[in-house]
Length: 444
Image 1: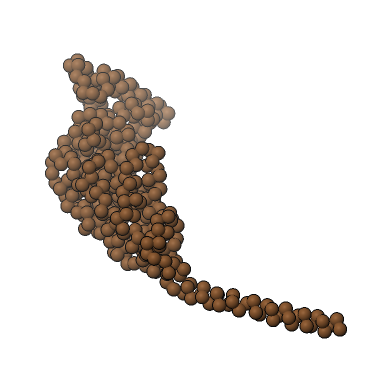
Image 2: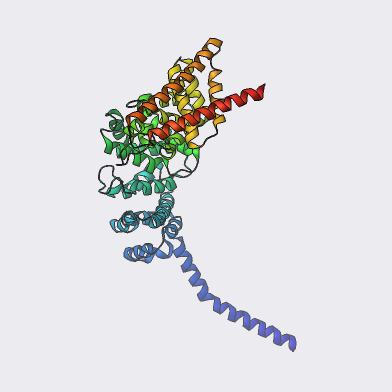
């Protein structure tokens, strides 16, 4: 009896279980039908409600949502193309001027880059660029000649952060297409041509436009040196050496106190390390990748030679300081090139100011002594070496007399007092010759 009772109980439970599952099976079938539609559960929603939901998603959440299906990504692309979304997510962020707010703005545009990267994932490269640019091109701050806050607006920097995130991981061929697309839609090449063909400083607004656009959009946002070199070469490669030299100075040269490119400053005044450091880093970047196809090893030397006499020869101390910042390899190559061409007077003057800058900026004087010795080894004949040594010592006397005459005349050009310059030069000469004598005695 116990076994029969247990059997009947089991049967009733089984029937009750089956009767309870029937409605659940119907709901499951309905759910599967909704999931099989391109928009899933959102298919029945009105467009206004769907847009309301998208408005409350963060850029990162929307980017993840866009990968759910092709239809969803299309809906998000439609949504971000509206003027309301543009005003709220792009335009209002250009008013962030404080340093604290700027960090948040950079993070915001980095997230927007991720959103556009994911929602356009299924489109060809050119269509992805065209769509992204169509959304951002409506903002006046991103036009080269329409921003009312130029040159203080950070629009180029924000767009650069966005673009860097958008194209991160793209191969070199696609990046070339990006550069071509930018040039085509912004007239970048025409603007560069106008800036490098007019007299230096005459088109100061154009020069600043080129500098801020190229650095903000194409150069400053990359972490890897290889990426920075690629974009710098895209900018420089189409132009001849003379234009490359001017363009490199426009991009990285020091600025004057009024915000213009410092053509006159490097000629008439002494520029400190901070003013020349960006230019030195760009030269080092080009020099370190000189084996790249189409980039000859002596190209950067020609560019530097041309740049230091444009529009007129630089102040000798600025030349020397730039060479020191560029490092011993570039410095030696420049000096050796002049030695081979017999330009003794130029070499001697540069070496004197290398010694002076080493004294003023606190570099080890042994560096200047070794550089002088290396340049001396370029001359193979003893008479040529003797002429080189005589030229250097005569130049010491000549520069000393120049500074003495400035002291006697009481001329002040806004830099260090001439008497202080003279004292620094005398100290530098003493330390330089002390180091030479010490090294000679140590060899003996």
